[in-house]
Structures are given as structure tokens and as C-alpha cells.
Image (cartoon, rainbow, N blue to C red; front, side, top):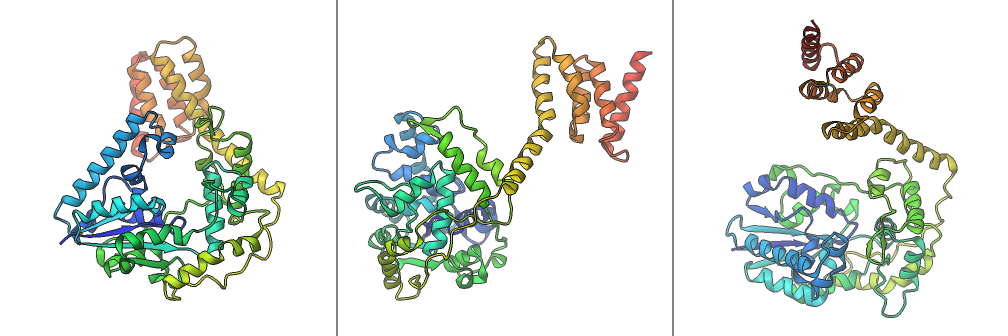
Length: 425
């Protein structure tokens, strides 16, 4: 009998940690009779396989699937991969995990249920829910990372236009996300868990998921809980939101050529101990706006998850000061400066191999600024093999201060230096 565990998030409830733990250690899980869908780590993109109009699916356009035919091919491939995965008789327990699955339309949820039911005799849906205020701050950061501005977030959350998709909303939408799964799979098959450390098994969402899904902990399954923290600190989010206003990621649905592509990853490396808080936000109004949704969650869980006692945040976060901002900018600029000589060397090396003029003089200028000891040996060898012994000598001279004199690399570099000396005589 095939059993399927369908984890549908919701967003900002540790889904990435669950997915990383299961995907990276799927071989170990297989030894315990558990198969994690190996299509990719996060299965949210399965939405394409069940989307009512995949040719116009905006997310695939953003991902670079430029034409309707290519988007349809992606969807067909995703569905074929899923069907193949479910059809295998072993392992007998199948796991699918994607926080975006909670945002399927009701018809898409029904289509997913029909697909799973063709292969699985038992289907359990697991969903985690976070308190409204904790969710709102975390989701606000996610929206900023996706290109939204604080103005869009405030409008979509507190005063959405009639018929608007409210793409930047901070409302948790418990009922809209969960009730359709209760209708499709049966309310008794949808397990709702609170994303609160004091309510999670072992105080950890990965351990709680394993316990809820399989009645076992990570150690008994031969794996370890892996945590993924993608959060930016308060200063970084404010900087990113300002960039969104001046250089949005998309213009008329296409990538903005004037926007840096590595902003989020660069800012993630610059952290303070200041968690992000949505600034200048009407929290009491937000609490009122989600009250009926909170009441529905309490009712559908028989009072087990009741967020009605959570009150508005007492105050907005303090304004960012220039010292914090200066530290962020200086840290990032120092990182860029550190990488610059290596990047320039690579660029000039390509020009050298293409026979471009001035490449040798440019390399002579940049080699004395290299600081990565792992580059010394391959560069010296390459210059010798391509007939540029003087450049090799430059690298060997630079390596004297960088490479450990007791290391095997030092011995190899010494042998190269000896070869060059012999070639002179």
C-alpha cells in the first residue's frame, strides 16, 4: 500500500529546513522506506503541472521560461516526473513538500488529489501555521525580497482594491489556504500544526515534521535536522526596499537590466542582531483584519491553535542610523575589493588565451594583488604550459607570502621554480 505525505507549508514556517533535511538525506530516508520526491528540493513548482493556464503562468516567466510552449513543456515534464515517482512500488511512503502548494486554486487542489489518489491508498496532508504577527513580519521581508515596496505591502494588506490579487498581502489566510485541502482530502486527513517552538516536537520544525509524518525522530531515521535561515536583518531589508523603489526587478514583466542580480545574496552576508520589523504599519488595524480568520483556525482545530490572544506590537522599530548603514556598505565593499583581483585575473587570462594585446601587461599589474593561495599553483602551471614564463615567475614570487612553506603546494611550486631556473641556463 502506497502512502503519501503531502506537506503544504504554509509559507514562513520552516519549510526550507524540512525540504533541505529530506532532499539532502533522501538516500538515508529510503533505507527506512521513505521516498522524498527527487524532482527538486522544493516542490512548489509542481503548481505548473496543475495550473489552469500554465502558458500564462507568471512565475515561470520570471524564472526565464520565455514562451508559452516552453512553459507548457515544463508543466508536462513536472507531471510526468510526479507520476513516475508515485508509480514506483518502493519505497512505500512518498513525501512531497512545497509551501507554494497551499496557494493552489481549489480546482488545482482537486486535480492534485486525483493524481495522488491514482497511486496512493492513503494521503495525509501536513500544514504548519504561524501566529499572524510573526507571519506578517517574516512575509513582509519575503515580499521585499521579491521586489515589493512597503507602500504596496501596506495597501495590499490593509486596503486591497476589490478584485485585486493583493500579491503583497501579509494576511496569513489560514482558511483560504487550508479549507480547500479539507474539502479535497477530508478534514480528518489534514493535520494542522502550530509553528511555535514550545509546541514543536523537540522544539524544532524538522523533528516535528518527522514525528507527525512518520512517528519517528531524525536520529532513528539516520539523518540530522538541517536548518535553513534565509532571513535578512532589519538594515538589509530597508536597503533592499529602497532599491526596489528606484530599480525594481521587473519592468513590464521583463527583468530590469539596470538592477543588480545578486542583491539578496550580497545583503544576506551582512547581518547584525536586529531582526526585521515592518516599519510604519497599523498593527491594531491588522489584528482586526485577520480576526475572523484567526477565529476560523481556532474552530477548525477545536481550540488547539488559538491566536486570538496575540495583540498588536507595542511600537514600530527604531529608525535606522547612519552608523549601521555605513557598516553594511563598508562590509560589502570590502568583500568586493577582496574578490576584485581574482576576477580581473580571470578576465585577463581569457584575453591572453585569445591572443589579445595588452593582456600580458594587465596580468603583470594584477598578479601582485592576488590573495588566494589556491590560485598560485594552477596559474603558474598554466603560464608555463602556454609559453609565458615571466608571468609564471610573477605568480611564484607572489606565492612566497601566501602559500604555507610546509605544504605540498609549496613543494610543487618550488619544483616549478626550479624548472624555470633550468630553462634559463
